[in-house]
Length: 171
Image 1 (cartoon, rainbow, N blue to C red):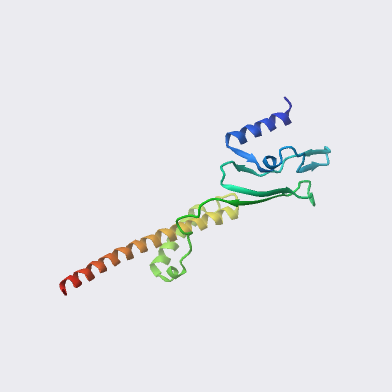
Image 2: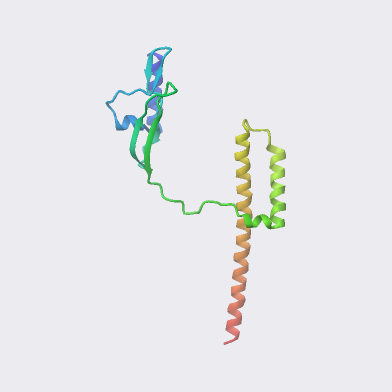
């Protein structure tokens, strides 16, 4: 078995085991279209593809290989709609109003100082370090706001109990 055939068989095996499908090939099983032309070898190949899980979570509207331009690869355009449910928990958002709280600022500064002194310069790229730093800020912010919300909920329950007791006494 030559290398090309072996690698193609290996790719198909991996795709089958992971339940992935080549979207273009699924939609056009008999068409002979190639995504790449290598002028050095004068060879066409089907390198560029969308591999998606075959779980019914996407409704593929269309998939099109566009004209090769500026590259030996043809851009692949995919239009789809997802059937994934919206998350029940709202997305996290930074609470800028908390940044005015001196205790919050002090806690956040301590966490950031600790993270930066330990981790800055250890990632392969500056972008990766910044993304990790954003995760640390989100985690700390989420933790702090969750703690504040729990404290306020407890205070509210106590105030409601006091109010109920006062209402019982006034009857």
